Image 1 (cartoon, rainbow over the protein chains, first blue to last red):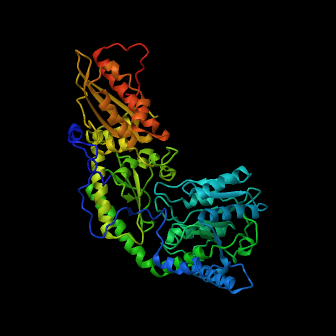
Image 2: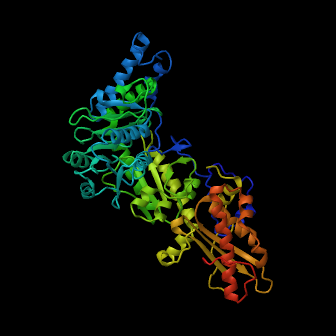
Image 3: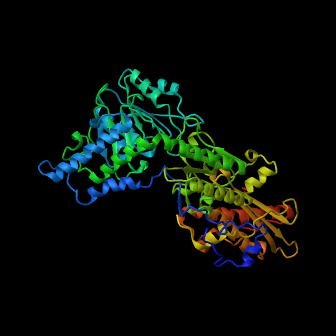
Length: 441
Length: 140
């Protein structure tokens, strides 16, 4: 839209527009240091840190050995690099290297954790507890297990996105054939950035003798995660969410107090102590290790920087626009996340107006299903709030100048779309939208 | 999702945005869709009582780019047509003109509903009998 320069639209067409609404804004000068397209969707993926690429490069070129080759130096070299990465990853989460299993990413890690535990502990019980705002990699895995005869409880969340610990306590079954074997609750949510009370959840699970898995994809490398202090038994990580490469992830599997066993889901050469066969992705693993090392060193300062930028973005938007709403608990929150609804403006139309900026919307229209974000719906906010929501994901490479540019652009487009919005007009006239008999379609 | 040039054109330069006096005898208002579905269109027409020609049309839409484009196009098309001519505009014409993908067909349906609702409202106000076989959206 920014490149719109009047091709095909003459003055007559614009002149026909009685209110003068032109959503194009080609006149906005680009501030120094801002390059388009601008990426601010760091919950979807993160760019590879150049330092990570440097670490990987030798393993994409000369050091190409198979880490499972035991009888020559190409193999030894690769194995050594993998073990270094294992240490780096373990250190970031307070684990020991032997507790790290490499996978292809967090979807596989979540599948391996949940299916692997369900299968291994089937004799002990058949009940699993998770929550409604999990990623599909957890929800769909649980749904599959339900078809296989497991019973799954999907805990609701409160209006701020947090689970109620009393709900969890009530849901855990400690006796009988329907005994709870696993609780799987994500560390931080990918849409609303809400951080669950993981330490408390872990403590409750351990008191009741139930294993605790957490999908920590959005949390690891962004906020402190410690599997010991947090009472976590199994934890999923992905490299590409923390400035590492795509296609590699890990699963932490506790070895002591208690020792967690997992039934493998991929059979083959018995790699990763039999829990995950398949030739190791050595360059990817090296990159993941390097990425975790950088996070460990820089996380504290980076979190403060991102949080400051996030709060600045929020304040700027709230000061300029009426009828905005922040979604999710902002106290227990990822530093780089802001999920905001611009009420009476539909999310996809907003994205269309800022198409040189990469952010996400919880609107139905961005998905093939026409269903708005199930995460936002789970907060009980009403579908119209979900349709109007935008997720900003600030990351390591976003600057204050970029935040200013994004805020200005959003403010501009929201104002223009509200001139187009019959709902906004009605609200300004004092009409109660809830009193209108809408024809759902 | 990539948008067609025509959708982009209507989104960037929506035609006939605005509000007509809904209490006027000569104005028909159609309000269709629902906020929770992510689409609400309001289409208004001003009809010449002598000729039954739609002399002006305005819209406001809450919805995705395709919904905005569909309603913007609808206002362009109804202008200058008689009421009965306007009733022949179908959603498939809109789909074709804007090259809407299957997932956006509901936007065109809503625009057709909006035209029919606006005309229905005008007819009701002016005591014009419904033509046989012409359904008027009840959602206004």
